[in-house]
Structures are given as structure tokens and as C-alpha cells.
Length: 65
Length: 257
Image (tube, rainbow over all chains, first blue to last red; front, side):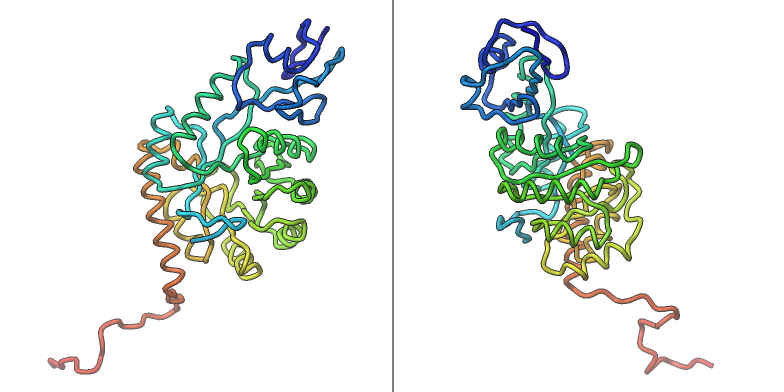
């Protein structure tokens, strides 16, 4: 399926958010995820099923002012 | 020392973590500043999130409290979602709320700011709103649930220093019991001392320290200026006068001719 991950189109066989993170080699407890503009808590990623065209944001800590 | 949402802090200086030339320089500036609150953000990352992880480790090693921001958000929905994602990562209800309204001046969109503050306060966030020096907006923010206010004194990163001292003074007078932090626009320690002399509780800095030739020394210089300004406010300052007033007593002066 095609997802929009951090603003870019991406083909993936992953069907849940946690599988997608694994496939993209994202790791670490510091990641934050959102699906179609809504926060997905860390513990809910495994149950979070993805659909064609879903917009996924994966953010991590960065320097800020 | 001031309390922000019931948490007493050790320092009146809050330090941003952006724009340092190296992580080591950031770490040294944080140590020399004596701050116990640093601002951080969340960004997209392609490298599996490892860079963010390394930064997060550095911040945790410094043993300071984090104040995540919603920098770069131009809409209420973006700012609210970013705040929620920040709470997930940083495990704090604190959020430095920025809703930017103008591309060139980075002036806050105060209408969106009030709306976002109300939503976030309703969801248990402790909001530190980056706002202007407008008193009516400040009142709306307090009504929306903000227990700290962070007015700018000049545009972000401009280093212009306080552009409207009467407005900052009025805000202090209007909100004697709300912790007030000047956020944005400070360029040099004398600017920080000036706003602290008005009775502000703290100052949030980033570029003025990060872009200095020696960030650690500048961080310490700011810490001293902030303490000096705070102490001067408490000590009661002399008001300016139009005419000279001799400081040496006139009585008993010798007459030689």
C-alpha cells in the first residue's frame, strides 16, 4: 500500500503502525507518531491498522528555542 | 525563586538548545548558565530517529527539565497535535505554545494562540504561551487557563532588545501574580537586565547565547545580568530626574575665596 510518511509517498507491505516503524528501521522510545492528524500513543501502535493513502507523521526530539 | 505551575525552579534563565555549533558547546552553555529548564522541539527525521535519540540522551545527561515547544506551527490544529506528540515523547505537561502568524516577523497569531491554549489547558497541559506584549491578549490567555505568560520583547532571533518597555511594564503591573517570562528578542545581557529590573520573573534565551563567539561565557554573562536585574528590582531603584542632584554633601564645604 501507499502511505504518506512525513510528507513523502512510500510503498510498504506493513499493515500496522508498529510494523511500518519496524520496516523503516525506526527505533527508540523517544519517537512520537500521528495518523491522519491524530496522535497514536506508543502502546496503541500495534493495534493501529493502516489504510491506503494514510498520512503518518514520525517525529523525534530535536534542538529548539 | 519563581514557580511555574507549582514547580519551583533554580534559575531565572531558560535556555534554548538550537543553533549551537556542536553538542559539546550546547552542554557547556547549559552548565555555565545554571539553568534548569531548556527548550526542545520535535521534528521529522529520516535516519530512523537515531539523531533525535542522541540529542535526547544529551539532554537527559544534563539533568535539566525540558520545555518542549511547538515552534514553526502556523495553525491551531498543528500546534495542538505537536503538543500532544511532545507530551508523548518528553513525558511532561509543560508546553511552550507557539502559533506563528507572520512569516517575516514570526509574530504570534494571538487569535490562534488563545484558541490552542484553551484546548490544551482543557487536556491537562501546562501552557507557556509565546505571545506579544498586548494586555488584552494576555487577559484572554489567563482566562483560557495559562498560569505563565511569555511576551516577546522583540522578534525572535532579532537581538534588538526591548522595543516597548512601557508595554512590558504595564503587563507586569496588570499581572502581579502571574509568572512572566520575556521570550524572544533579547540580544545582550543588558537587555535581559533591563526586563528583569521591571520585575519580570525570568528570561528565555537562545540565539544570543548559541550564536555568541563563546556561548558558555555568554551564558554565564546572561545569568549574572538576570540575577543583577532581579536583585535591583527588589532593592528599589532610583527614578530618573531632569536636574543634577549633588551626591556629596554641600554642608561643611570649605570656602577658599
